[in-house]
Length: 373
Image 1 (cartoon, rainbow, N blue to C red):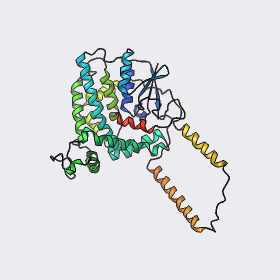
Image 2: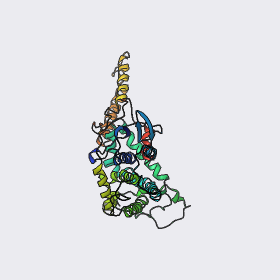
Image 3: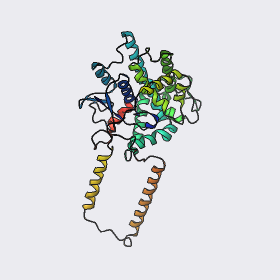
Image 4: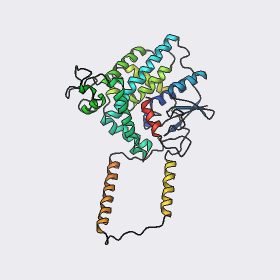
């Protein structure tokens, strides 16, 4: 039996077993080729030799990590979704997969992390619930920053002029002008989507619209992209489109582009989703068990220290006033983070970890979930 280690899901209620498209893709691949496997939700990538997820183990040993490496291993084991394709079709599938993992991943990242209303209203609170306190204070913001870095240096955000005023992209401009060197992602975030929620002229969405049209034309009225049998391309398209289709967002420009303009793609994802048995994670230990144990030990060590005499407030009234001010400021800060959903308790139904109870989220590996989308 294979074991897949994947990032957990804050969207289990929507039927998604991970928030990472690569993890969803490999799970769909295993399910479509009818392999014997089990799922482990994890909050760290320590088990992966490349510090990225998904990771696959067989016989208790890690064999591969990363989508393509796992697919190649599964093919060598006889689980090849592309066995019925000829050389030309395999080349086409590879090209389509690269297109999906490039442009559609950028559009998904933009929609989730760069559209403020989506990030603040849905994505950040869900991720905070998934990882729990205190990681909820760090993880969502770090993922957002990493998405900004990726999009700022990627193709869809380069080579476009700054929006002309508040009306959107300009019609021209030299590539070497000072303003053109401003990161495109900053300009898009600056002009925002709250005033123009449905504009498709933004570079990331415009490129995604082109890719979706190509995929829709390739699928046509067929059940799968290459006929009556699923392929690797079907698994990848499901992994990248299902989070867009199934997660409702305040600004759903990207979802609308699929459901309204390309209903065959939406139907394709729902058809594959209906074939997937929702995996029951094999690992159920709390992600913060090790962190809480360390905190407990610190408290015990602190309690064992000899008590220090406290200064009398009457002898030092200024010190007492400072203590009251600091305490009040701390209470205001805690009220702010709780009110804004920055701190959230982990949900036992959605938060799962690897079999090591001391595992906490590995930030380097976690950011690779955004980098490798």
